[in-house]
Length: 422
Image (tube, rainbow, N blue to C red):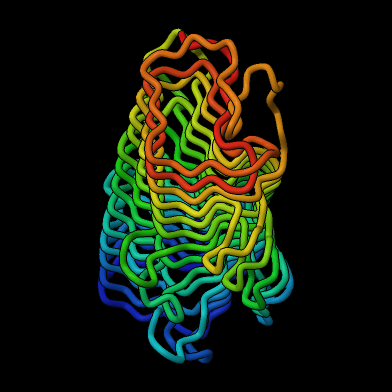
């Protein structure tokens, strides 16, 4: 027995200006391809709310979901969520969710009981998600929430956001768990505001801003103008890359983002670390501003010192504890904390103003003073300027083969060493 508000089993259909509410299944169930649901004008909008399953469930290819309100009332300001989630993408490739056309109505995917957008099948590839409020009301300033904002359980080569940030940006906030959770490989997240609303106000996600679990080669930000995300005001880490199984996440990139501050350089802290890599391998963290976070700027860690994972990360050309104007926006603890981790390179960063000691003097190095009683193994500190007295900018615990090169560290302790090398 079919229980959808609308079931689409034919290609190239247009669905506009409808209400799908209080169905015992999905609001709209799509099996076919090349359909348009909604549109770029407000009169095209569909409202999908209070359905017992998903607002929209997709199984066809090349569909476009544009300008709809999914999980809210018709005003876009009140929460009337779909019980299982907003949009679920199953065997669906080449789908577009949200329109980046100038003047197009921004889509709202908020207030839902599950994820705002969930990828649930490995054939969900090449999906584009742009110009949505995810977890945020239509005002752009108030939270309505989902559980996870965007949840890629299975699915590759998705583009979330884009380089034309004014039109392609997603605003992702107010979700009870992570803003974006990625559990598959080769996806890109560019130009979004995660934990920040339209008025540059904090709309925190209850978990991490971006959470990469176990998988490889995902790109957060990028080298081109407009690629960078703002990842600030979240309850957990700004970005968290970690292994949940014995398979280690490898080759992920975090580049050109603002993490812990807003677009004006104002402090909008993530509630834990700016960036944390736990049991990961070969993450590149480059050209970010990682400042203003409650705890450490960057953490590189293994939770089991006997394992061989979590090595060969590269941390270079970041501003840690300052903004791009050179103003102090301190992280609450260390600029960089490395614990039980091997083979990492810290290169060309500016690390300043970070706010907590965390090191006993007997095992610390301060400019003009000495190394404590440490057994160092393949540690190099070259061509660096270390300044002043104060809390540790870099803390290394149980380290092996770490390089710190061409790094400006000012005005506090340069490098702190805690524990002995394994």
